[in-house]
Image (tube, rainbow, N blue to C red):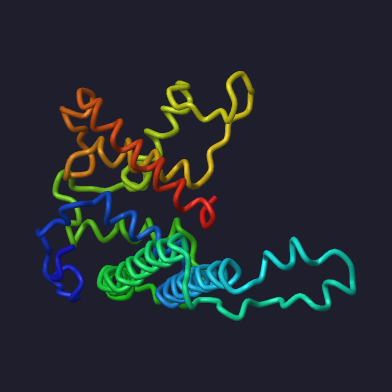
Length: 260
């Protein structure tokens, strides 16, 4: 996004936003999550929950005396003499636990860095709402999306968000926000995606994890840098698709205790 667009200049701006798809998605996500404070609170809570899950999993796996509880605890009298916690816990952790903590600690740090990396974009969108759309974060709790779209459409006349056409419509904005989702719906409707959990079972299941994997493997690789043109080589790169599917499958299996 061009910084000049956010600085409240009264002159007509012709420096168009290069990636309108990404921009309008960020505008909608900011509205959907109801402003900067709600977004930051939600992401901080997610980081805390992930850290708690990692710590609790490691503690249960290493500190609890599972051998005594399973093999020695037969009745009330024998269970009374079994220690709940191991005396040598975490002194010589198993290689699996070390690998577990290493992988998920790196993942947590990556999520933390991603949190700080997104701050600049979030501040830009907040500035866009405040100075261009005249909508504060407190108003996002009551304002409708139709109102936001109408103000963006009116802004096109002076800010020139898009130079391809003189006027933007609500339909244009919706198409850009839902471009990839429309492709996903078309693939499902044409039965090109195997979303049945068992062969022959007339039940379609699309979990958030599966949706993410399909988006990464198919849609992200389908479009070029502009975000709205299909790569000419996409339909020919079968091996690349196989590698992406294998990598997503392995990552999903590795993170299966933490994602659904």
